[in-house]
Image 1: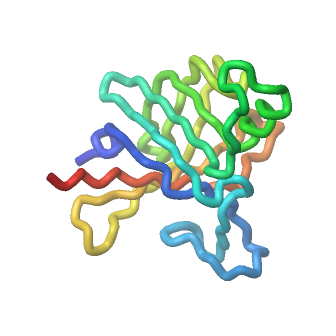
Image 2 (image 1 turned 90 degrees about the vertical axis):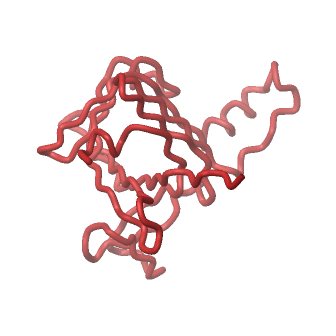
Length: 168
């Protein structure tokens, strides 16, 4: 099976991790670069999210931290409620393609929570991990690549897992 076929489908967010070599917690990110330490990103200690890759080339991703507080009035939230909710939320949709030779997935953004991303291409390096003891189960690790040469990419890894099939 090629990488394109491995991408296609639904993925659930397992973790959003900040990666550093200087962290004293001792949590190493399995399957990534030697010597790196990873801890959950602030606000995303127990994230929720869905990532969809369609075989026709469309994609969509949405993720949120579970610490978000519900609005007092759903259809008319206060400015502070909007700021708070947006601090632990992200999402965009558009088209996707692979550059398998570079192990990069390209997301051509059509609509996004962050307005600056609309109309851009987000490049992420990727790797797949087989889950031991669970044949056919995959984890997809995505690392951001800077949007422009003048920026540094965040040292962050998003880990996505194929959802388990519901038991009858």
